[in-house]
Image (cartoon, rainbow over all chains, first blue to last red; front, side, top):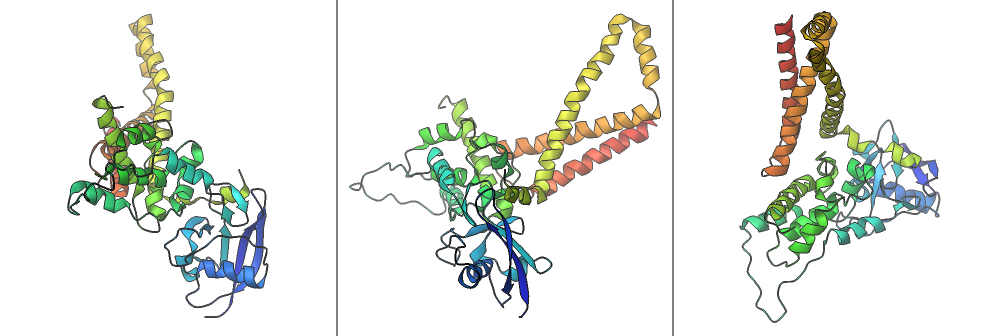
Length: 238
Length: 119
């Protein structure tokens, strides 16, 4: 494969602008390859974030031609439009510089959603056996492969409307813990996610599912949280 | 908001985002209609003749089209609301886009049936 791609990259902070570069097109080239080519051959001051390059770490998500994507696993041949690529930082997050978005707020919301495992036993207790076929484990397994890339957060219009909204990833994480029978933090967790900006703020657009690179369905997780918080409220636990 | 965020239209390219907007706009439109509905009904307080003359004035094709729109809005809002209630209160089921499309199609059929019956 030969030819050039017209690549527009976001430069600067929130008030920056797109700058265009000509990048050689290659076979099996990923969007991350394109960004790396620009930094190494055209402008070494370009800032972006990546680590594993194999879709494990969730560091390299960017906005590619208007859609949030994991750039290390996105082939340019699949997303190029009229020979052009427009690459910006993730939406719904502050920009640090160029293609690097500030994920602080994103991870603060994981904390607010009580996305931390609360142990119910000590290290002296025997390890509890959990059947992979049990209903809670199946529900947790369906949501557990999140790589924290924030693609769902950038794709969510409810996040854009409501700054307080915890977002799909944090709530999806909370759902895995709600279904973890070893976890002892559900009382405070359900109280935290039932508050304003919690699971009930979700409008079920399913954009998170549409864009999740790991094919997870955070909307289903959030719907589960809505049911669990409602049940807890009826029982007088909230 | 930066220009970059304005360029991100990803959520709106989603059929279920459109379904949510149809639900919201139909709800707002129905909320706008309700005061007019109550004002019309309230004419009965001023006597049977006043209400009857208003209803006769409304008995024209333009109002029939308006009523058909109203039936469509009511049906699409109710069916869309039922879909959301199912999501939030029943175990998750796939195929939400199909359900949203079905709600739209049924609402259109109901409105068409109303129009045919009204003419």
